[in-house]
Amino acid sequence: MKNILHIISSARGDLSYSKGLSSAIVEKILQQNTISQITVRDLVKDMPPLANEVSIHEFYKHPELYDEQSRQLLSYADRIVNELREADIIVMGTPMFNLGISTLLKAWLDQLIRAGVTYIFDEHWNRVGQFKDKKVYLAVASGGRSTEGAPDYISAYIKDVLRSYTGITDVETYCIEGTMENGFTADYESILKEF
Image 1 (cartoon, helix red, strand yellow):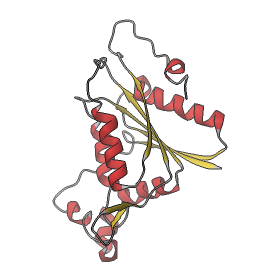
Image 2 (tube, rainbow, N blue to C red):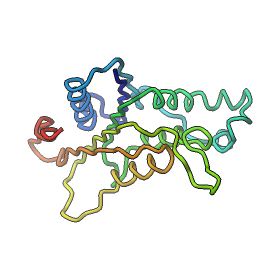
Image 3 (cartoon, rainbow, N blue to C red):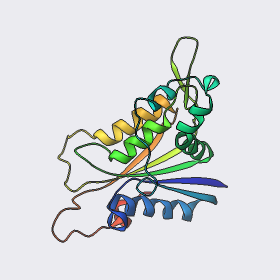
Image 4 (cartoon, rainbow, N blue to C red):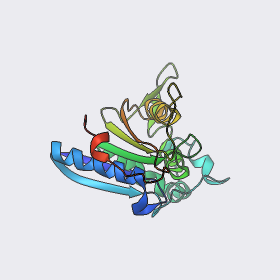
């Protein structure tokens, strides 16, 4: 039995192609696996708080130094860390914003990543992620189309952040492109035909 964490980060609601693609991935997983639970984290409906002058210091404290203020300021962060901890499969959807991920997904990552929680340092001061053996499916929607040889900033960024700060290395990316073209129709089945 496996648990899925489905992260939605587009502000377009049901019109979102990244949500449509990530939901299609969830359906594919349901067809292939025995799933005990699906947790949906819609970042539009429950926005991650942005770091400020007070809260930023809490993210760099060792967990042993947390106090009541820490627990209050990190309550959202603790919730999403626990969701990640309990998930076997993470399905993450994002639109492409100026060649990068959505603002909300970046804020979610900033709340998630914490020294002493998602990673620790070994005796040589190398980061060691604490969430290995999880699978991530990344669903990316783009209004335009990538040109041959163009860098894939989103996949590279997500893979590097997860590898470096959580220990997750198994990330598979699916893209839907050209969503702003006249008469565009989403064909999630063909995108996921090799799933």
